[in-house]
Amino acid sequence: MIDRIKATIEAIGADKVSLVGLNFQGQDFSGMKLNKANLSRANFQKANLQKANLSEATLEWTIFEEADLTEANCSKAKIFAADMHQAILVSCNFKEAYLGKVDLRSANLKNADLTKAKLHFADLRDANLEGAKLQGIDLRWSRYNDNTTWPHKDFEPMLAGAILYVRQ
Image (cartoon, rainbow, N blue to C red; front, top):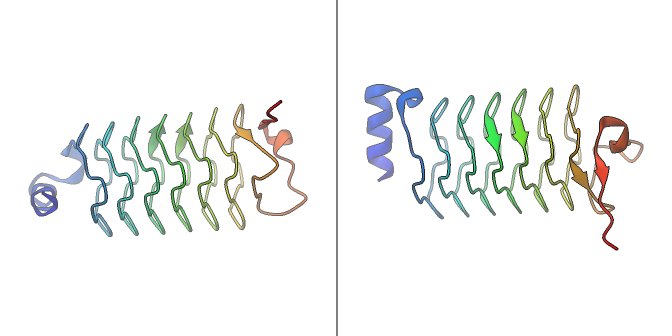
C-alpha cells in the first residue's frame, strides 16, 4: 500500500492525496512527503514517521499514539483533536501549526520547534518539552501538570495561558 501511495503522490502531488480514515498502524512512513495531504481520521498508531514531511497537512482526529515523528516537519499543519499520546516528537517542527485539543499526554517534545504554534485546549500532562522552542506559542486553555517538563525551570506556563491540572 505504501508503494501505491508514493506512486500516486508522484503522479498527482501530495496536496491532492486523501488518506482519510485509513489504517496504517505500525507501518513505515519515514521520509515520506505528505505535505498538504489530508490525513484526517487516519490511524498511524506506533507508525514510523521519522523525517516525514507533513507541512500544511490536515490531521484532524488522526491517531499518532506511540508513533515516532522524530525530526518530522509538521509546520503550518492543521492538527485538531489528534491523539499524540506517548508520541515521540523529538526535534519535530511545529512552526505555526495549529494543535487544538491535541492529546500530548506523556509525549516527548524534546527540542521540538513550537514557534508561533497554537495549542488551544491541548493536553500537555506529563509531556516533555525540554529544550523546546516556544517563541510566540499560544497555550491558551491547554492543560499541564506538575510532571510536565518545560524548556527551563523558570518558565511559567500560566503566564502563557495554560491551566494547571490538579486532580482532587
